[in-house]
Amino acid sequence: MGNVIAFCEFTGANLRTSALSNLAFARQAAQHHGGNVVALLVGAGAQAASAHAAKFAPTVVVVDDAKLANYLAETYAPIVATVAKANDASVVSATATAVGKDLMPRVAALLDAGMASDIAKVDGKDTFVRPILAGNAYSTVQISTPTIVVTPRQSEFEAAAELPSAGTVTTAAAGDVNAAGAEFVRLDAQKSDRPELTDAKVVVSGGRGMKTGENFKVLEELADLLGAAMGASRAATDAGMVPADWQVGQTGKIVAPNLYFAVAISGAIQHLAGMKGSKTIVAINKNKDEPIFQVADYGVVAEWEKAVPELISEIKKLKASR
Amino acid sequence: MKILVPVKRVPDPTQKAKIKDGHIDLTGASWIVNTFDEYAVETALRLLENGADNTRTAGSEIVVVSIGPDDAAKEIRTCLAMGADRAIHVVAKDEEIDSLAVVKVLQAVIAAEKPDFVLMGKQAVDGDANQVGQMLAGKLGWPQATFAASIEMSKDPVALTVGREVDGGVEYKKVPSPAVVTVDLRIVGPKAVQNGVTPASHAYSGEGARLPSLKGIMAAKKKPLAATKLADYGAAAAPSIKELSVTLPPPRPPGQIVADIPTLVKKLADEAKAL
Ligand SMILES: Cc1cc2nc3c(=O)[nH]c(=O)nc-3n(C[C@H](O)[C@H](O)[C@H](O)COP(=O)(O)OP(=O)(O)OC[C@H]3O[C@@H](n4cnc5c(N)ncnc54)[C@H](O)[C@@H]3O)c2cc1C
Image 1 (cartoon, rainbow over the protein chains, first blue to last red):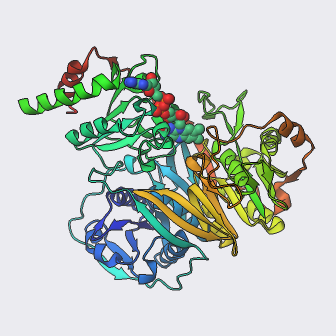
Image 2 (cartoon, rainbow over the protein chains, first blue to last red):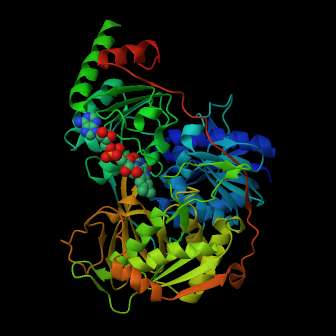
Image 3 (tube, protein in one colour):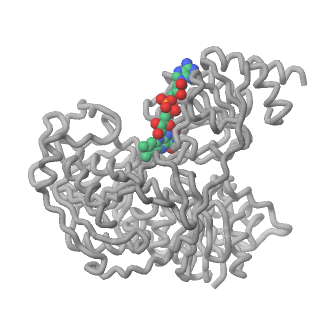
């Protein structure tokens, strides 16, 4: 026992940035358990990302099989559980991404493991701090099962740095791949050249007050000027103004950029839960009494129709003056 | 078709969190059905009715199950008033149960009830854990479709094609019966649930789940609600997760309202060093 199995997502030859947060968590957990970090890559083509993973973990286990072409919790969970057992895992973890949240509770069930979701901090061998009540409180939980499953929150664990020397890569067999009848049908991908919402240094979010999807263009112009990712409130995503995966909040993406713009967003607790870890928060809203102004470092009481174009031109001026 | 909907009551999220003796103080709290579970009841109804003429599919049944304290019966009745047919209330103190214990009870309920699908909220908005649906599916060896934003039901064989909001888009996943489906916010969109009975052109109105009608509230009083105990399911009251303490995060230091955009940009550059 003692090892930490860190399930890592990848695209092509690289780990996803979110996986580096998981590896940072895994290093902390491994210290508490006196074991090693084992990065686990699962999927068709996983081998391609193994060299990148080895820069961050002393051991990398690769399960690469054509039958794993599309992620399914049903086929991945037994593999993660098997690798965990074979590698004397005390802790099994994955970043709380869409995949991590879908997969890890199923892994926990297979391992009879207690699970701490979306944790913000490691507080000992079996003790973790995690937000509850939409981030309005932090709960310290202790888990007594022999194996523990954890999903660390990306925004709370800074990406792991590279190791002085690369780790070793081994492979494991996928075994029987049985989807229990589940079928991947298709992915309607949202293509974007902007940084991922959860990685971005700057996020520009719009709310219901933007009124239409067309009106978001001006926010996108601001975002592109700053190399920012786009976000939105539930009201804007529900109304179909912007894609669903732009939603920031308790039940959407959790972000903690250097700079967050909330434009025409009222600041409901569910929205604040997703962004109040941001370093600097700017709110632009026409109503001075909105709760968003209570968390904003800088508030401008104005209509976006006037304020955002002016903001764009002022930032351009600033950039030109440097 | 029979659908089982596990539901949880949660403290109304609009209340301010208070701490007493190192834990959340819930004395005098008001309670609601966890919003996502309410959406699951709504989804079950939309799968088993003709939404255009408000008739339920013949022979269909929606069973609600809740594990929680005595007074959770009130929130269970709310689900019955929305249109669920029958309920099981497994009486247990909150500190006696964690996700694994809930899963164990649900497994026993499922063995007895044999539902075609289990539909539930993706997370409870108090603990925000997002675990039970996936754990349950894992224990049962059933397929799972989490974070459902849309569902299309097909017959012969019965299956659900679920639109799941994932990082970078929407994934469509098909699961045969029996399966566990957990629902996300947008499942209550006007046309998010297509059951092949309600005309595809029919748009549900309103935001969120339906409110119980007066008739529904009256009917709910007569619907069966069976009270059982944890021990009836062989589940021990020995959770493997213990809450040691709860703290409130420090408030953000107060910000400032700035007069205009040029001032904002100047402050962002010079003071916050954010530009
Ligand atoms: C279970 C549950 C989960 C939820 N999860 C999330 C979540 O993850 N994320 C999330 O965001 N929400 C979530 N919500 C919804 C949340 O409660 C709010 O309803 C939502 O955040 C409101 O979005 P909004 O601020 O855009 O809209 P509103 O509250 O309607 O605010 C619109 C704002 O626009 C301003 N405005 C209007 N016109 C202009 C103008 N011309 N110029 C400037 N300002 C203008 C108004 O003053 C107002 O403040 C959840 C709700 C529930 C029940």
